[in-house]
Structure formats: structure tokens, C-alpha cells
Image (cartoon, rainbow, N blue to C red; front, side):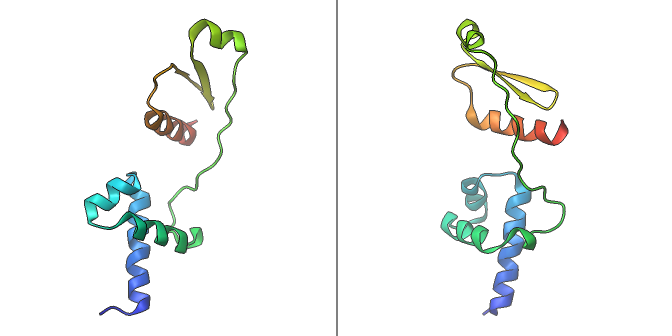
Length: 108
């Protein structure tokens, strides 16, 4: 049986692995046979200062929205991230847009 410190260390490593995996909680847990509730609990327990160096904290991204006339003509919107502009049309994949914005925010 592990000591508390060993158990915590194991979960700190798991949390770091989750953060570096790029997977959703569901995917990560399924691949490793861990209950999502356990991971969520440890994500709350392991403070950002406990995370290994190299992880980039999330940050807000400025989104500029054009005039209402722009929306009426093309039924979509333009999302500006740094110097990049992404056109989003109805029926877009929200997960894909999240990944694109996240990637662009690190590059731009």
C-alpha cells in the first residue's frame, strides 16, 4: 500500500500527463482506466503551482466582431486571433474551432 505522499505524487504525475496529452477528460480516462470523477477531483487538488514547468496557462483571446451587416450577407462570422482571421459558418464544429483558436493564440 502506498503512503499518502506517494499517492499524491502519482496523481500529480497523472495530472501532468493529462495536461500534456491534449485529450479530453473522457478520452484520457478511458485510455488509462481511470474514472473521470477521480481526475476532476485531482485537477482541483493539484494547484497550478504544482504543475510542472513548460505548461502554458490558458489566457483570454480578444475577439473582434464585425458589423451586423457582415453577418446578414454571409451567415457567419469572422474570428480574429492575433493576425489570423478565421471565418466561422453555421454548422461549424465547436471543438475544432476551440483547437484552432488555441493553436493560433500560441502562434500569433
